[in-house]
Image (cartoon, rainbow, N blue to C red; front, side, top):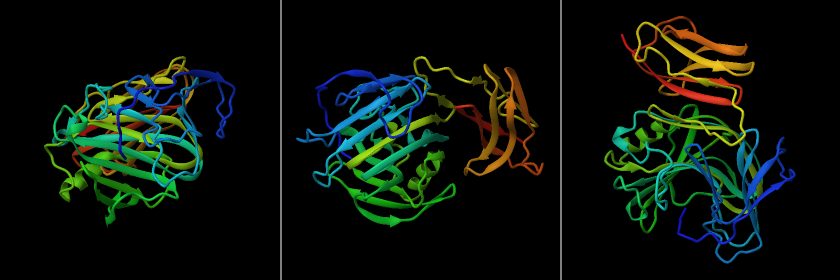
Length: 355
């Protein structure tokens, strides 16, 4: 994918009845200007139309929903085989941006301890498109356009579209095989991990992709990860992506989308003690009765233990983990991740178990 600077030409925000293919239950704010942006928390929605060229008979909007969902809708004509757009949500500093959405990014590759993305979305589309995560790699911490050395994409769905370059390997991460493609562009190297199965919800352990690239000399420990993005590359056709929950956790920095007028189900506190031995308490507070799940995963994304899976009442709650698996067997020393889902709120916490 190539980006270039472009002035915002048309700026308007519409509050409209629901006209999207995926039904949205509440009032929706549509933002339909080319390159228009909307920030919330440490995330930035962008109506990216980088491959528009001279095409005028198209429509594309990003949107925010009162219930906390967000996403985008597109309709592009079948004119040429190149990518026309990449409506997206961003975290960090895209090389064409002047600032980062969060202080944790850019981050030097050698300092990445964990990089976890939780997502749950619905997508309906036709034509030629993909669903792709992406991060840009730069040679220094400024993470400007001139410093780009690599573009890394992770495709989790798509139809009628193929990545650039040649197939070089088929690694396996967290239950899925990915075909890895590589291409040499004019100014940087392009990589695309293409999942052999569609993924519309789940957890991506990005540090596993990073470690694999390091082991294959596709990435250098001294380089910097500038940002992280999720969007749809669109060649032609129409579609909509409705993101119901999304969070990016870099090392111990967790970001949860916060939208205006959104009522969250509760909040999660930091586990204590952490690091721990023999046990740690995972605490949270509910502002409404909600279904709650508390799960433990290892660094490879394997589920180790489910501590809670039931509806709970308003108030503070706590569950203790004794460093055991579902069969009450002690786990090994190391890093684990606790995923807490309270209604639509999804949070991941890093745990360190000592012996």
